[in-house]
Amino acid sequence: MTQPTFSTHLGMVDILPDETPKWQKLEQIIHEEARKFNFEEIRTPILEQTELIARGVGELTDIVTKEMFAFERGDDHYVLRPECTAPVVRAFVEHHLDQRGGSQKLYYIGPMFRAERPQKGRQRQFHQFGAEILGADDPIADVDMIALMMSIYNRIGISNTTLKINSVGDPESRKAYKNALKDYFRPKLDQLSDISQKRFENNPMRILDSKEEEDQPFIEDAPIITDFLNEATAAHYTEVKNHLDSLGISYEEDPHLVRGLDYYTRTAFELISPDLGAQDALGGGGRYDLLVEEVGGQPTPAVGFAAGMERLLIACEELDIELAEPKSVDIYIVTIGDNARKWALKHLPKLRNADISATMDYIGRSVKAQMKDADRENARYSIIVGDNELKKGKFTLRNMKESEEQALDFDAIIKKLSDQ
Image 1 (cartoon, rainbow, N blue to C red):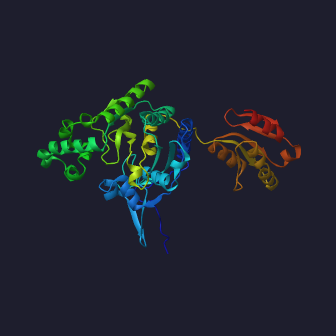
Image 2 (spheres, rainbow, N blue to C red):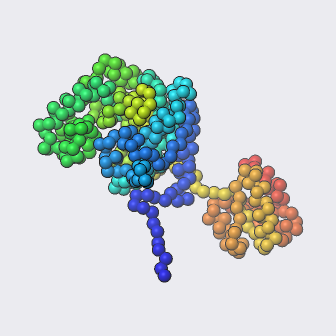
Image 3 (cartoon, helix red, strand yellow):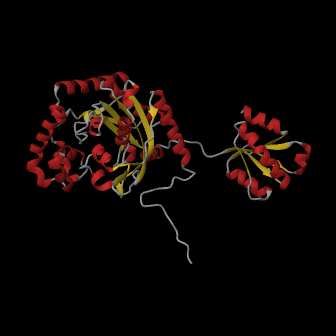
């Protein structure tokens, strides 16, 4: 009987050992930069209630209507999280994090899921990192959030970026703006793309997000939301720009950068890079002062951002940024005979306890084959252990890069490697 063969699901990719060091280094940078900004990590389940995501993301969005991995078990409805802001807000409300005092500065790293057509930098299982500040209304919180996002990219070495900003107003401003958009687009409705025609009635601001070619001329001449901001919202936006200027963070104002959902308020921002091609967004975010209340909490101002890790890694490749050194091991013990193998097994922990990475042959290969394996493992040093070496208590330590050798006892080997 022929055994079945298995492969990953479409759009879900194995991250193999050659790639994981890059991911580990990227995660390390995110953790370190978040710590500098005094953010705390939060980890939420991959599985969430469907209604939470529908409320958090918006029932009319493509994510909810087309892209969720949703299923039922009995009377319960679940979804694999397509993003992490709604889960973080759910955790904030459920665990009463507002009672800890002050604003809550949280960040996350993890996999998300969307059943969309896979393409470069976008898979059905993809990874995001992001951060949220809950409980802060001041424009300084908006700017500190942007500064955290920028610090991660700067730390990595990605400087070919553009920060775009806008204000999407408050509910009052946005209502007037939506009416103006409808008045503008209504005579042109039959010339818009199918998707924009569908968005017209319930969410006309989303038309401005369209990438369809036939929509672009109309978007270019559409009313801009900053003309509809009330005094308080306009003042908030001005303060954000002033603070960005004071930090030396350059930006471009993009009047068509919007967040189409009703709980988004005031600041919106996006970081793009031409190194990503047509899909140039690295990350983005904004204020969502009405979301906590939308999912059952008390009215709470909040701001956050999210960024794709796959797209960030693509940008690193395009810019020849090496996130991690090639895999290597400090020492490879080459063994001859059973006594040597037993000795190696006993002494490997002593090396590792001294913070020296070490390995040995597991399958009884010849000395020549073991030395080739040491090269393949990119070992810095090797030692050959056989009965003669065990009898003398001295081992030849070979520098694999420079082909230099030195006869040392085991304690001297540990000291030499520890001093480097």
